[in-house]
Image (tube, rainbow, N blue to C red; front, side, top):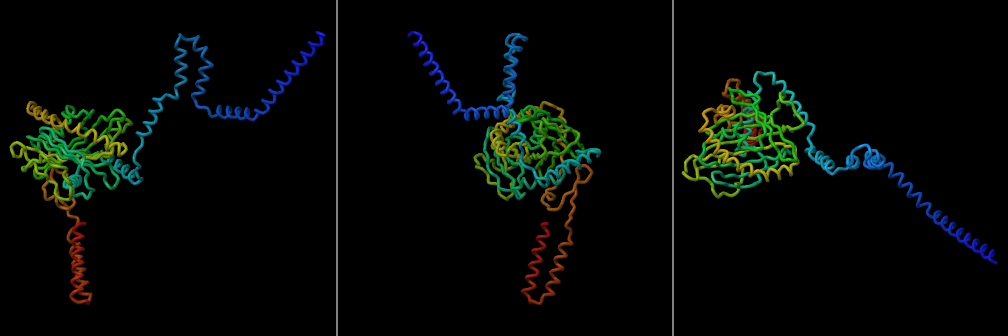
Length: 458
């Protein structure tokens, strides 16, 4: 009886185990498509795995060697470096910033060809005895004169700010040229109790500039001409921490006409200073000062001045005495810093007044320095070499050409009088050939007069 009970128990157990096994087999059979999908996903994921996964498994497989063959802690350090080598946040941010900083406004192929041809021509001119002699010519002066009087045909100026501190009054404008070039800035600064000559030397003195302009890192004169006062200078300016420093090769020269100093600086190619990756060289650069004294009322509470097509010789007078002891400086500046236009405009607007307000105390220190120091620096002595130009030459529409003798200049009228006689003669022939009475002849002569005016402008 007992034997029969054991057999029945074993049979029931075997039956239950077989039913469980059948159930498990059924479950796995039904989940077969799911497992195939999982294995396929693991296979595809392993093929397309990122680099840090390989480093992770490399560290896991070699962790016992790192822990046993090196001092404690060094293995964990190596494993952590291997794990985070390619996924560091700092490296990702650095790569993003380098790509963003390398972006520039698109330049047309014609502009590239013009730049290359200018560099080639300038390198060929280096064989001359003094490359700084004609680095700034009268065409640059004529262009500055038109911009100073707002007769260059540009777009209207947009007001930026108006500030004043004791001894200085400041206004600034800006505009974006129609040709897509860099943003242009214009400012008007009035200094009290100072002469235009000392202000001219203050802006030109590179040795003293380090004492008031904290953005200047390096200033060095590369070439100079004692006959014309022209100079090729090398500057390096400090930019904010997220930008590389900027390098400038500038040509500069000072002109004077009717008591107004026209100080011209512009970017020029110069092959003797090789181009480097850092600091980044600025090729498109123009920075000019128009400095003069005045004898009318100082505008203490002026609003933003609307720059129109009229003559922009503003009146200046000292606020204290009413005499010609105040000095007006009109500053015209533009440069391609290699930064996106909107970001550059924001940076200039935020840092403009912080930089400008340092000029007034710097100018007072320079006046004291000049009184205490008998000898002039090299750049200040070069500022004394001024080329004088008559005002009639600047107002003339003739092409101005510089002679090769010192600071003399001459004019060449390339238009001649032939154009006028051709128009008059043609009008006479037409008037005689057209039989339309007095009205037809008057129309012909009116047309000839308009053509002669057009030829006078060309």
